[in-house]
Every structure is written in C-alpha cells, then in structure tokens.
Image (cartoon, rainbow, N blue to C red):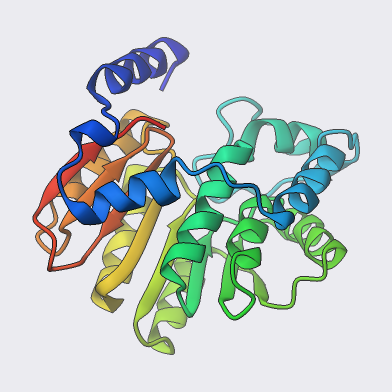
Length: 261
C-alpha cells in the first residue's frame, strides 16, 4: 500500500475508533482499560529497549533471505541492522502491549511467526517465565542476530527456529495440542496470512488469542483481516490499526471493535 493510501486508512481508522465509552462488553471494557491502554512500566521494558537502541546504532550489514512480502522500504539483499531495526521492528508501545496480553492471559505456549531481530519475541517471553515462546524466522542471518539478543538478557523460555513458515507450521501443528496464543508477524501477504490462519484454526479453543500484525500494511493484508473477522469460529475482534486481536470465547457476542490506541 502506498503512503497516501496508508494515510487514508489511518484517517479512516481514527474517525471510527472509540475509547472505553464506546465499549459495552464487560470483558472488553476491562481488557481495554487494564491491558490495552495501561501504561504501567515493567522492569523488563528498559532491558529490551536498551537492546533496540543498540540495534538502531549498528551499521553491520547482513545478507537477507526474505521469504515473505519483503520490505516496503528497502529491497536490497544486503541490509544494515539499523535499517532493519528502523523499518521492521514494532514501536515500543506495541511490544509492551504484547507483554501485557501475555501477562493477562498467561498462555502456556506462544507461537510467533516472524522473529525479525527478536524485540517482540522478548516482550512475549519476559511477560511470564513459565510461558514457552516458539518463534520462527526464515532468514538465517537475522536468526543469528535475534539469538544474540536473547542471550544478552538471559531468556531461557524461547525456542528460536530458523525455518520457512510453510515448512515449519504443518509439522509444528502435528505435534502440538491446542494453541494458546499466536502472533502472526511474517509474510505479509493476503494468501500467506489466510493460509497460516486456517492451518492454526483447528487448534484454537475458547481461550485462544490470535494477534495479527500490520493489518493495514497492504490492500491484501486489509482484505485478509476482513475475511478473518467474518469467520464463524471467531467471536470478538479488536482493531488497533497496527495490530488486530482475535478472540474465540463463545461466551462473547460476535462483534468487531475499532479502538483508539
């Protein structure tokens, strides 16, 4: 999506988005106030943001093997780490939201499709040391950088896998029971996003949470998000523009919310 279309989408989002006053389900009202817009600082945040700061200063170039939609900014096969960090890492507030979501729902397992340099992985993993985070990255050199970052803060509950999603995911799902929490953050195409969603869907239960990154990144991603929202197994969805959150809880009415964040 070009910058003008993206800006138009953002303006439309801002016009539609509501705050707590427009939320009627008690579940979402509590989640919005105590999790989504909560700004309580946690000790882990400063450690992770210190690593981000170092990544933004690194001029080291690495060769990129991109198996997804690629960067909308830099298509070069060789990229500096600071360029990757600047253009692909989620802003701190979104990483911290992932932390709070894991802290709130306490999943036993988290699956992340798209490690990149590991910032979001660290937010997911530091929320609960008892949660096992499996994160998958297709590019070998990016995987190596992420591993160094995990080691810097001594995270023991992350399994880092260097593999293409299309190869990894079917095998992972065969040996996995139900999915607790999935963060879809790689291969930003409509076809791939819907494919991964449909593969994971049979493993979802009423307590499962799916989070989709960059739901307005392109026309295709926006179309994928619209299709996902309509699926009959899904009850409540939350559109935060940069992220979309999906719930399967059958105690909730089927509703779609666009919330300010």
